Amino acid sequence: MVDKKDQAHSADQPGAGWSTEGLGYFKHGEERQRVFVFCPYLTQRKLEGLARSPEARLEEAKGLAVAIDVDLVGGELVSLRAIKPATYLGQGKLDEIKTQVKAKELDLVVFDCELSPIQQRNLERVLLVKVIDRTALILEIFGARASTKEGELQVELAHLIYQRSRLVRSWTHLERQRGGGGFMGGPGETQIEADRRIIADRIVRIKKQLEAVSRTRGLHRARRKKAPYPTIALVGYTNAGKSTLFNKVTKAKVVAEDMLFATLDPTLRSIDLPSGRKVILSDTVGFISELPTMLVAAFRATLEEVLEADIIVHVRDASHPDSDVQKQDVITVLQELGVDLVDIEKGTPVLEALNKLDLMDADSRQALEAYAERHEEAIPLSGLTGEGNEHLITAIDQILSEQDFVIEQLVPYSDGATQSWIHANARIMGEEHGEDGIRYNFTVDPIAWAKFSRKH
Image 1 (cartoon, helix red, strand yellow):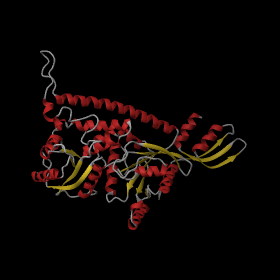
Image 2 (image 1 turned 180 degrees about the horizontal axis):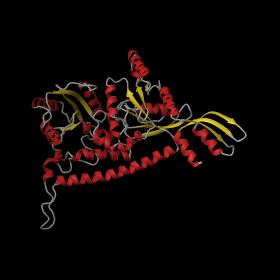
Image 3 (image 1 turned 120 degrees about the vertical axis):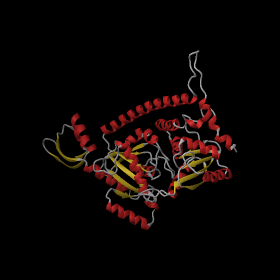
Image 4 (image 1 turned 180 degrees about the vertical axis):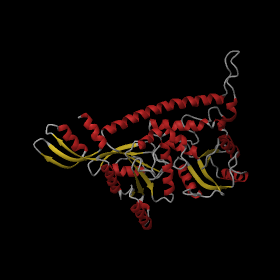
């Protein structure tokens, strides 16, 4: 077992305060680290509106820790009367936690709250063990899950933005100066200034790379619009079952596990609707409460798929006790991106996929069905068993059909291109053969028809 004091002060070594490849709090591939989660909460703060209970917050924090390959020893609520500026917790609580750290031989302690750099450093000095907060834990999960170059760049950008404000963790070595050249060179820059400059340069380079990725993704979207296939974006709280539903509907094999943030990178597949229309279904990254703002910014290029979608399907875990709270968290993040799920009359049509129907008892199912009767956009279903999925597909098809134009068009027999296009892209309600050609009565996407008409 590594000496806890040596381990806690390993950040004293040059360069240990930050890394361009991750936070480095978890040793992947080595012996599993023993981790404990503490969830501090203010006893005097009353729960307002859709606020989570401390117990629910603790369970979610433990779920986040399990998402990393560690040995989760357990979790515990920590009641506070007030937050201490220096250590977040009072001395009495610190003494209790220090005793637990030693007794349980912990390697890492996770605090489900936002710690300032000073608080994090002071907690490590007192507990003699590595300490991270909720933001660092989520960043670590994203770093482990990213599987594409774009995802890796997005996570690295978020890491660097987070670490830039925490170079104080490297303590004394950052105060050393690098001497300048010549007699008039001056004292030179301190190590902390050099580290900040390196991070700033790397952030600029990554942002330029992500801008190129965003442009490429925009070109891909433009090509899909020319096809033209409507895009349906799946959004929702992490572990709501988006990937399971996506796999069931598209018969794809996207990773779908009972784990927070099982997938990060967007996946797109085409499906055929009952009307014969082809659409693109997009599975996006899941959201979570108190999602770090740097992650929202870093993943903006990926989440632009939602901004460009013709229909948004909000997948909710209807069996979860905090389903309404999770819904509000998703709405909040999407509003930051410019998508308003509340005022849908002025924006993109939104459907609510009330998922995990298979996990609900008879009374809960009855209540859910009553809710769906009052809200026509709500559709109870099970992404795992497929129950109710056909209702979702029909609802998507109906929304797209309502957006279509009803057109009556006479097409000469010699115009085979237009005849072929109508059969491939429109829903034909009637056709009549005459002397001058075929008179079609059909519904079609107005944008698609306008694009085709301009070319012919």
